[in-house]
Length: 217
Image (cartoon, rainbow, N blue to C red):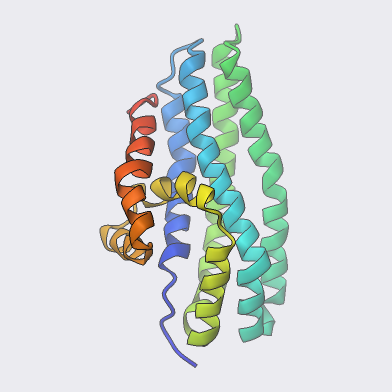
């Protein structure tokens, strides 16, 4: 049994979640009333995040929690609670999407609709922070110290194969955008050379162009 399995990619995504959810609310505060184009750009950016989030949670439920449970069967109640929370996220995400769609129509009661959407985002942010804390206090230590190196390597391979090239192209620039420099460098080093070239020369510049056009940039 080994100690110190590298959960860099897993925890980078947690950092992303903690950053992007409140950032959506902050950026919405910079949208002028009736500016549908700004809302649509922000929605495009937000949907990159929700694809990452949904893929992350699907990977946890399908691959990660079974590995943690094999190492510590006593975590069964925690795994079931986390999966239950994942299942409840869809309603929160749909409520946020509904609010964005409403704003994109330029409603007459813009201020009221914006206030309602910001409240939904704040509630989702609080829920996600509690969810991440539960994962990091109960699951992460087991994955780091109680899962064998061989098993963890196999898990990492499963998670990588679960992503298509299109999902890497869409997701990776956002995932690494504000990552700790050392973690970012470690993740980029793992990318095959040909894909790394595409990331540096194409994927990341295109994403940065989108971010530069967002309200509040």
